[in-house]
Image (tube, rainbow over all chains, first blue to last red; front, top):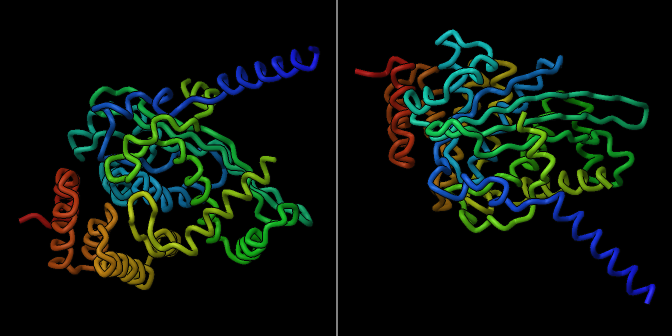
Length: 226
Length: 120
């Protein structure tokens, strides 16, 4: 009897906990499952709130690929950046304050994607090294000006591989220790993780088939709202 | 736990990028796009520019050979980089190839053509 009660309590705790933390993609981002879902996306060069000046480069060169692979039409970020620069817009923070309808008018974009780097902390120790990357992604519709997708997270990537036990990580760490350019794979994997939560777009085989994937942390969504 | 998870994601990402050459959801082939773009960004110059141009061309050639769609923006960026290295005729051709492949890029490409001063 007691045993059964314990099982029931455990099950209840487990299910309530799970339903509190996780949401399906369509619950979290309903606009991505109706006519508000964008095809063309302007990716604004990353806003860098860290002291690591090079961090935005890593993300600017690696973001087009995953957005396209998720089924969207991203406009090449470097071209967009050059056009902004010619217009005298050097700081992406200024772009965030502009009405998004500008992007519809000038580029034919259905949505704007902002990426903010809030942390890029490299820690070196004798046997271990890691980089903590804090990121926030916000996608805004240019027709309704509403947030249609967002993701934020802080990810620590082990760059030394001593504690992970993965051979691949060891290879990676060797690469990172030898050349600074090898942060590109790290930015790539951080981006790849973030875009798991992005509903698939028009050109993906999974378009409109991924709505019930339970992959969105509720607190992440709420945290990114402010 | 989270370290293992990250390790797992890294492993998966690396295996995917190492073994398969095309994306599972869209079928796109990207070659070393981000690598040559990054090299151009940190060390701009003729050499890095022509390497990136060659990489973009090779993504197009490989995609055509495999019978898959060229990823979005690749024709556009090739046109853009060719204009930077003063190959205007080829640049125009690639920019119009982008619109042929992705008609929704029309407004964007028109904007790029004005920006590059390639209009009549």
